[in-house]
Length: 166
Image: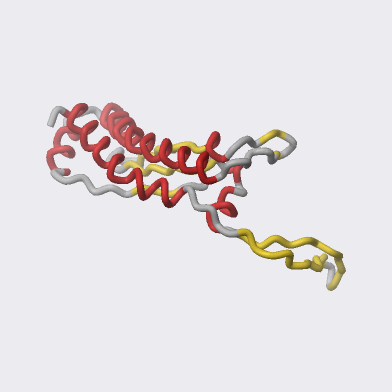
């Protein structure tokens, strides 16, 4: 489940207390706690990005990938958690699945071109393109992330307190 999303970095105040609590736990239990804590914040961001995608991108979702329907970008927003080998650092990625490769075109805008011909030169095939114009960006990732960040930080802080009894 690879994403094409944004990565989130969050610095935890009083990290020494958290580190001490996690250090007394077995490595797999501490890693499980970290993943679940991070997922709470990731879900807040994922939900806000989904909401932004639904309101900003009405009418999308009729495309296909390898013959299968893709659906609306908002239906394919996922959150991924990765834990480093030492079990002390968690990385969160949230964004559309790789099948929604076109979501970056929606987020940042793009040019529309039509291939009008091809020619071969030196063993390579080149395309002759006609520029049809530009499609304006319709951002949903960045605004969703910006709006959700304070809520995600609060949710993570509350989950840390709840799980580690700080």
